[in-house]
Length: 396
Ligand SMILES: [Zn+2]
Ligand SMILES: [Zn+2]
Image 1 (tube, rainbow, N blue to C red):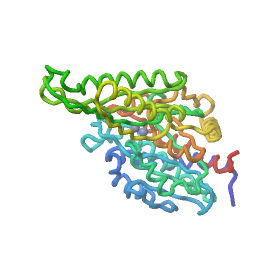
Image 2 (cartoon, protein in one colour):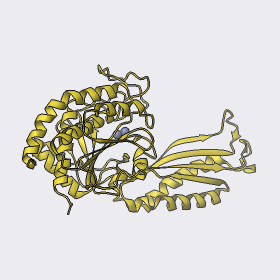
Image 3 (cartoon, helix red, strand yellow):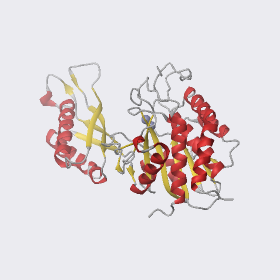
Image 4 (cartoon, helix red, strand yellow):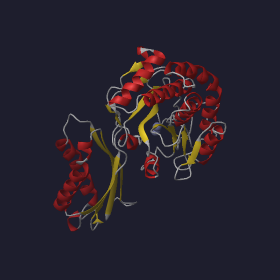
């Protein structure tokens, strides 16, 4: 007998309660044994192990790490629920009883919470909605560029998927608060490297050579100004040079090469499309004026996450039905951070929700803490949202 949505919601609540010890066990074991991007071998095995009792079709990700898990009847339009599983090269200083046992590696972005929450949604939906089709993605390598989302999409993870949802811990909000809005919520994340070449020579006689240090300094200023004047000030945009290398041990030698690199972020595609031509034009002009040569390497990263209004509306409905209006907050200004869920969102209607994980230091710090209570709540919300979305297909 097929249950009504309301009956399924009622069952969901008691199942979440029942599953919570398992979810926390998984969270703690993953937190204690973190693995950096593209090395998530044990993490993948732990999730696989936890899935043993669940009726599902499990595939490894194309890189041998990460998992794609299908439940429900095959060949039906699927709702995809995505969590990321990788950790960061940071020495943990939280003092948690399940603190990282690996020197210099830490789950400092909450991906342990994401993994356990997606696992919880999977467990619940497999038991209460076996007639519906869902795909759960435990994605490797979110923290690097290019991220694991690209590998998965190339391997066909979006075939048959009609909508996708995901979550991210938010240490600026208490547990039980969720933030979401439609439109851009993160920025594109592109990197560049520029090499400036010249003859080099004696610091006493710059007129006999080309000064690559001065040229690099002037080019950096020119790039900052060029973007300032070419990008509509109403659209968020930022460029930062974070690395510069030139010369060696001798302050009286002008080097033959200076290399610098930076990060360029924007929340609008129209702005992002202008990055390469502006960089190219500015470099050409400056190099010619200063008599140096250059090489530009532009490394495109993920686009910005663009939340689809229809999926956002379903997320909102799920939050309000679970915890009431007061649990729901707007995100406000988009983050200039990157998130490779954007590759999913570029292809299918998608939304990512910020999950209050308890007030803490920022993501990517050695003292970042996410409250255990985040896990059952996030699992519940993902399960409820996925079920609602599945019952509303096709999205209008
Ligand atoms: Zn991160
Ligand atoms: Zn993250």
